[in-house]
Amino acid sequence: MDKDTRDKLIEAATPLFAWKGFAGVSIRELSKAAGVNSALISYYFGGKEGLYADVLESSLVYLLNTLEKIHHSGLEPERRIELFARAVSGLHKQKPFLLRLLQGEFVNPTVCFENIVKPYFEKIIVFLPAAIEEGKNTGRFDQDVNPFYAAMALSSMVNFYFVVKPLADHILPQDENRDEEYIRQVLKIYLSGVRRHGDA
Amino acid sequence: MDKDTRDKLIEAATPLFAWKGFAGVSIRELSKAAGVNSALISYYFGGKEGLYADVLESSLVYLLNTLEKIHHSGLEPERRIELFARAVSGLHKQKPFLLRLLQGEFVNPTVCFENIVKPYFEKIIVFLPAAIEEGKNTGRFDQDVNPFYAAMALSSMVNFYFVVKPLADHILPQDENRDEEYIRQVLKIYLSGVRRHGDA
DNA sequence: GTCTATATTGCGATAGAC
DNA sequence: GTCTATCGCAATATAGAC
Image (tube, rainbow over all chains, first blue to last red; front, side, top):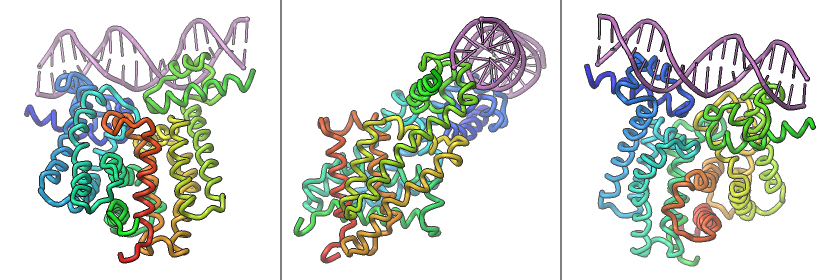
C-alpha cells in the first residue's frame, strides 16, 4: 500500500534520529529498521534530510496540540501551571524520543532548526508566561516575578530532568514513582516560590 | 614542538565537536581548523574517537574543579547555592562549548558517556544535595524538600536556560544583563520555595 | 614529527528492470 | 511502488618518504 511504507519509515526513523542524531544514522540503517528498501527514502521524502524534517515536524505537532489544550482550558493559573508540568512529564514518558529530537536540534542544529523548530516554539512559548502573568494580575503571585524568566525556569525543571534521566537513574532515590515525586517537589518549590508571601 | 600540535588539535576540536557532534565533524575539518595535517590525529590520539575523548575529559576536569572549590568553601548552604548558580552561569558564558559537549553526550551518547561523563558526574552530583541537606538540618529549609530532587531542580533551571538560549534570545526581554537577571529570578524563586515558611 | 599518497570502507542518491 | 545494482564521493586510517 502507499501510506504504509511512508509510515513505517517515519516510525522506524524517529527513535534512530532521536538517539543517534541526524548525522549519526545512515539511510541503510534507517531503511533496514523500517524493513523497506533504502531507495524508498528518496522516493517518498526526497532524501534523508526530507525524512528527518518529517519526523521532526510530526513530533512537534503533537507537542503543540497537547499544550494548546491546557492553555485554552479556562482553568486558573496555578492549576494550569500544574497541568502543564504534569502534561510535559507524561508526554516524555509516552514519547521519549520527542525531547531527544528537540535537544538534538538545540545542541547540534541542522537546517531544520530555523525552518521547523523555531516556528513551532514561537507558538508554544506564550502559554506559560500567560498563566504567570494572570497569576500576578490576580495578586496571588509576587509582583517581582518576571513571567518570561519564570516560565523558562519551570520549563527547565520539567524538561531537563528527562534529559539527564539516563544518568540520574543511578543517583536519585530508587522510588517507583520517581517521576511523579519529582514533579510534585518541583511544583511545591515553584508555586511556593512565585507566590506572594506575607512578609517578604 | 611536541605539545604544540596536540594542544592546537584539542583547542580547534572543542568548538567543532560541541556544535556539530561527534558524528557531524570529519578529521579533515578538524585538522584544517587546527592548521595541521589530518594524519596527526591518528598519530597523537589514535584516531578521531581518541581526540574526542580527550576534548571531553579536559572540559570535565575544569567543571569539577570549579564546583569543588565552592563545595569546600565552608560558607553556609544558602550562600553556596547562590554561588553554585552564579558559577555555572559564569562557566557557560566563559566556556560556551562545555555544556554543548555534555548535552551532546546526554542526547546522542557515544561510548564516552559510560567511560568519561558518568564517572565525573558521580563526583559532581554530591555537592548541591549536601548544601540542601545542611539547610534542612539547620532548620531553615522545609523538611518536605528532598535534597536530590531539589538539587536536580536547581541544576535544571541554571543549565537548561543556556541550552535553549539560541532560541530564547528572540523571545525573552532584551535586557543587557539578561543572564544575571535570570539567575537572580531563579534564586529568588528557588530559595523562597525551599525555605521553611511560617504557616505552610 | 610531519608530510603525501593511498587503501579501504561506507555514505547518499539514482537509473532502470520488474 | 519496490527492487537490484552501481555511480560518485567523502569518510577514517595508514604506509612510507622526508
